[in-house]
Amino acid sequence: MMSRRFLFALTGFLFIVFLLTGCAPASEIPVTEQQAGAWQTASPAEVGIDDQLLNAAVERIQNGSYQNVHSILIVKDGKLVFEEYFSGYAWDYAGDGFKGELTDFDAETPHNLASVTKSFTSTLIGIAIDKGFITGVDEEVYAFFPEYADLRDETKDTITLEHLLTMTSGLEWNGMDVPVSTRDARNDLLQLFLVDDPIAYVLAKPVDNEPGTRWYYNGGGTNVLGEVIREAT
Image 1: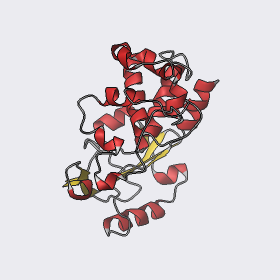
Image 2: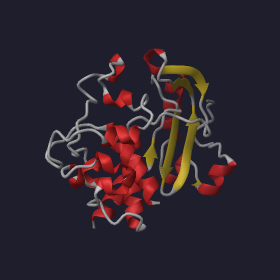
Image 3: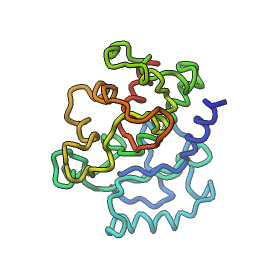
Image 4: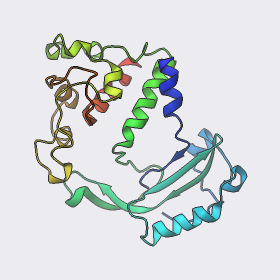
């Protein structure tokens, strides 16, 4: 029951917008060989989407009215109906405002997904449960990491996948009180880019609230969930 609720709620991303050149008319979709093998395609009009609106959106991205959009992908009714890429700055931890090189993004360009990672990770947990790699969201997190047994304690052993998914693990974390933009070392998210072992960094955190009792935005928990998926599959 829980697995399907996670799976179906979180795979509702039929309209996916990533940060993503060129501007073909909206009804003309450039499809790479790899994508052609993975998706059926259709024109926007064939699935009831107004391609004039899409063309207007592309024009606004290209003239700068819409900022920081690097790509648009639209999947509707199981078909890829729109795919367009734009120029922009790659993400760079050391760059001014985290901006790196000016890049012509395309389907093969690695891209910083930022917080949308949480949605995809949650979806993958649901799929892993549905396929039997993980029994359910009540599994204990630290049980997936026997190599970090020294970081466990009685309270941490009660932290479940659901707690990480709902950001109620109770693990001490500073991701909002000190903004990332300040580059203050007290921000735990920034530390994940600096430490040798990000998973150990998160799992070593003390518990400052009983798991399941308090919500706090914690990107580190998402890293741990990603590693859980890799371990389980």
